[in-house]
Length: 230
Length: 396
Ligand SMILES: Nc1ncnc2c1ncn2[C@@H]1O[C@H](COP(=O)(O)OP(=O)(O)OP(=O)(O)O)[C@@H](O)[C@H]1O
Ligand SMILES: [Mg+2]
Image (cartoon, rainbow over the protein chains, first blue to last red):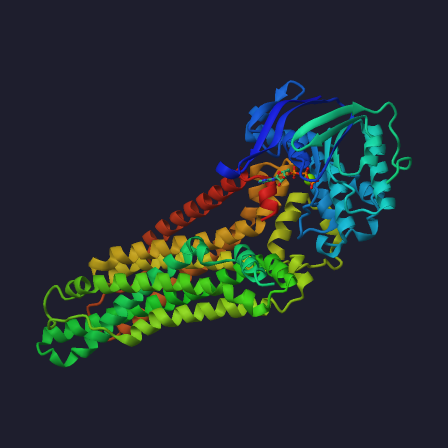
């Protein structure tokens, strides 16, 4: 379980200092699919980065079960990221000098996952194993970044707009695959999106508005990637 | 339309490099300062001493004169053969690497519609850094010169000598390097801009992608970190050379300046050693900072995934270690050969000149200094990376 308690985060100094996250308190249950919705600039990515230990809140605590990760040392954080967390960035961030296969291997190696090729297959990139990120389209890069995070067998998967660069059909396939894996392994998903329809796939929806949580609600039934509108 | 231009110029200057970034290029200034100082001092002295040749009458004076000219040649030969050449090569590397790693910004500006020459000309600041360095170095030499002349003639065997001003020295030590590096940087950037915009933007420009041919099998079983290490080195060969070369400079400069102690008067051996050490350290700093800069993103990404600091360093930053050892060894041999040849040739006619031996003490000190400097620099940079947020690194 992930619990955030009264997180505040500021950017900038002096005059230009402003608050990106305002008193955020929330709970994410194990195995849940949580979606964070909100307008551009409302602080979704910042919240995701803070929850996933990539950024430090200025105040407040974040508990993973009973551990407060805001108090962990750098080496404990490394261990946490290594064992528990998978991350998919809005901007992909692949290693430019490694090909598709090796980029995914970067995640797989940490989990000693030998079957990572099946994940590459599932995101539809088996034909591009030897291509370098510079030779891929935006959507293909995004799928590599999805495969890289999944190959790590994370306990919690953080996704920042994982379908932002994908067309409807590919987007559905990728989401469906992520959900299939979730059913199989039971990991927790926290996903940021603009797309209101995708929220219907989630257990819990958190709506953000200029740094604050404006609404949290649960869906009775989760729709599949093929049942939602796009 | 009218107010668009200044706005655009502001943007462009922020992205690449401007006069404000001179502080970041302090390494260039320090290196050129040292080189200009040494060259100015000894070249000026050598020119002046030749000018008083006719005034020397006593036989002791003539012997002294010959010895001074000879040791002046040793120092000039050594500083010419080592300090200057290496400094120049090093700076060329540095500039090339700097511009290469800013290919993306070049691409964006080009895509925005800036003309090639308009972008390229911003790189003239490299010339300014060289100018600052050489002016300070030359000025320091001018200030120190009277003292230096006195020390050289402390037995008063030579007639009284005053430092003369030689304008062509000023020109070749200040104006020439400044203009050279200014043109070099601007022209290199200009030719780089000839690449298509997309190539620049995708950053694949500087990464030479090498497709393995037929070797797929042994690659498959390689652990990721080993693979990464190999790839990092392979994809930027120029950096490998840079690191090797800086280790070469480090080893030759420090050992040479320590060995000169026995060949030239005691008085300036301290100065030579300090300059040798400063230069050596700056070269290493420049090459390692380039290594770190080109690999920061990879390290940041690895940390997000939970690779430890140690794994990141050992697979990315320490991959260059063997090359640096090779460079160090070559530098040791090089400085020995150079000094030996210079001494043999110049002192051939002298009877009581000390024979030149390999200086093991200098090797030991230099090696220890090198290992310590290398590890400390890498360590400091790793620390710096861990303190930055992933986002800020990736967007750089
Ligand atoms: N490093 C930073 N320094 C200063 N301000 C920042 C920084 N990062 C983000 N911001 C600001 O914080 C706010 C929230 O940014 P964030 O990236 O979290 O938005 P977002 O909700 O993810 O938007 P989008 O949907 O467009 O990705 C924005 O107004 C942004 O300008
Ligand atoms: Mg965002």
